[in-house]
Image (tube, rainbow, N blue to C red; front, top):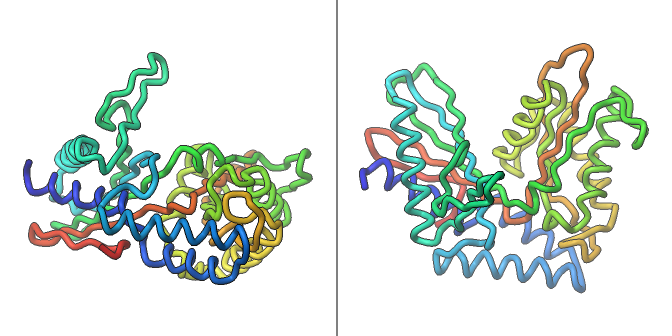
Length: 292
């Protein structure tokens, strides 16, 4: 195994077996604010995180889809990066950091090593700096992914028009429909505008943000804060058992749209909010987003 593949393997291990500090701290604050069954549920989640970290085992049995975002310099070959990521995913499966999760939709056959058409997913973005290489990884579980939803406004069913009130109605509806099925408390990544594909892309890219950050757009920051409060007032709670914490946060981004189209896309992330990043400089990797 070459050095780059080993570095990708370590990135996958960290993402699968640990949570970033911002997520663990948010879960801890939520537990301390709850009582009864909701508090006990969050406490078990945090114990699960601690044991997964200690024994370097997956936090969740569904290790999810591997989504890589790669920022690279003009002298870095994407083909080499993709080969290393795929080889690392196969080795991570062999070491049980990942569950075999790549299934052919026609035959139903599992590839056995998390590889296949579009698996793992890699998004490349070239930057000016030579030698630059930063890789962000998100593991997106199937339960939360099934709770994702895209709205086309206006939407008569939820009385959502093409305005801020309509956008807010979409977020409330998405959280209400998810109930506990998305393994709450979750995080909503939201993309407003774009076309059908880029709107969903924006919603997932928002999930790479820290839970602790503040949207640089004051209006979007206000929407994120307001809807987080309103959704938590629904009382759905951890795993749908009722409580004060249904979402840990909302992250919202925009893309310009066609005059004829107005999409609001919601990507739901479960409490096992697994993400990590690595930066490679002079051949050496440094990791962030996790504590181990």
